[in-house]
Length: 342
Image (cartoon, rainbow, N blue to C red; front, side):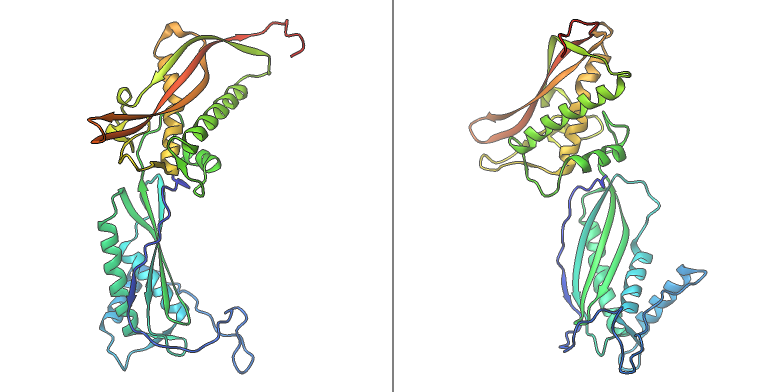
């Protein structure tokens, strides 16, 4: 979503293609000059009418190159072909998705005088292709597709292959219009750099954000602004076993409320995507209940209170961590005066 980004994981796969010790000084290609003080020529990607045929032909050429008499490519050119052939073989961008995942593969290739031979590039690509295929097969995501595969090759022969994978993280929202809207909102509210402990920051931040967001949404709907207040009417309570997401959720028994089984000594952490799911789910729960009962009239949620609870059965053999969502409901009253200046 998405950027509804569930996780940023660095997958370190070091494949030694051909190891060579090269002594050189790193330079900026934009400023590097040769002995005649002329700018070094940079690689320009080919402009062809049929890119599929072009890349297929290059791949066949690379696979049939023989050691000792094959051509060489400079680093930028070799990286472009490595990336392009990988995208030709694996990528698909013509799909719908709700989230992106970022991963990185590492390799080593022999670089001689700033050049990579076609045979070494082919050996490198064989390893890359095998790893990409294995990575894909082991990736437990719905509707997964490689959106883009990038590559770079350093003067020392270090090869970095970056994978951007699109996928569907659930396919239904409860409060927001869609996961794109939810993702934009969550990107502004939650941070990948924070640790959202289920009964610590995860709980308190969800409570803070939900109450701030819904209060602002109500104010935005009132025009022109006028003083109004709530009269407490009732309380709604939501627990994990009573609120199941028929579309699927990241939690125990597809609950719409955070609930995970775990070890007694483990501390569950809500990832950003799970925080976003809870935000969408918890916000919607009281509105669904109000809207389903015509007698509730102009009742509105006053305040969300998120509690944490440990469930135990048979000692420590079965342990579950879960939230309980309690929502104070009030009758909305618009004031016609008598505010004493408040």
